Image (tube, rainbow, N blue to C red; front, side, top):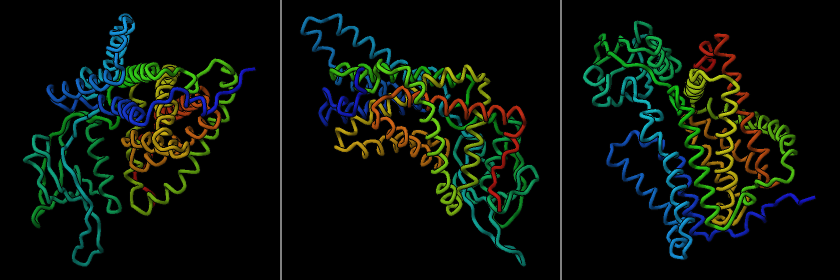
Length: 413
């Protein structure tokens, strides 16, 4: 029987500290930046793409193979890297605003307390920025206090959350007009603003979002494979070996149960922090928008599960299999490497809410410690994919039963 790989096996042909840093940075930039290229103009978009291309080629050094007479190998390296860069950045070039939805109103706001004659202090929404060129420009002004939307007063307990929800849900998400009751310079007036269609927040705001996400996953996996190859490493250094592969399917079940336990343990202090910092309402709204965006993709559970096998495998391959060993080279400690990788993984999910970043970081740390304990990746990949698929199935059930829209975005008093 072949021995199970250990973290020691990841040190075989491990890159130097400068190279480990350069490789980790390139992969992380490729994961996070290209999907947001759509927000840039043509010239900045081209500059970023060329910089990524140059960065990758400097690490892969295909000219060394060319000079040594291995020209087919050099050409193959360049072509595969071009495929990796093209797949990971395609959404920024061809996916339009798939990852950067335009604001529906174009304002920033805060919550302030006001006191009326003979009345207790109450919270209202006050605008502190009106973006030029967007629907609110010329209609609403900085300093305006929003008292009501379409004649309905905002909640006095958490008006910002209700304001955001009213904007998002107005007109059923289609283009419409919103009527605001505002207090401006001591006077109350009605202001009407025409707004465009609503877009869901996060990476799931268009019907083809999952396609672009899968394409990016393929691109980053190819890049990781090329960097491993150039370092003289292989799948074993990622915890991917054939021996015991069938057993990994069985181990994935307790790993999945542990993931739920980690989520529950993390949720308790996070809920307390959210309550103390008055973030609960915003977090509930962000989670609801995320769930709505997912179910509105129109995917069936089997199709979503198949996509999650690819996407979860990409995330585990990148953040656990590839990034943790390189962080170990940089930090000299496996636990520190797991925690830093988990923190980066959590930040990548900021669109789900600020407290969700903490919760997902905890989940990432759990998967990371499971990975370095056994140094096997398939069971973690499968558990991650199953976790996402079960969550999606629950969201789909809530949507079809009508409960998703009824979920509160206001915390209980």
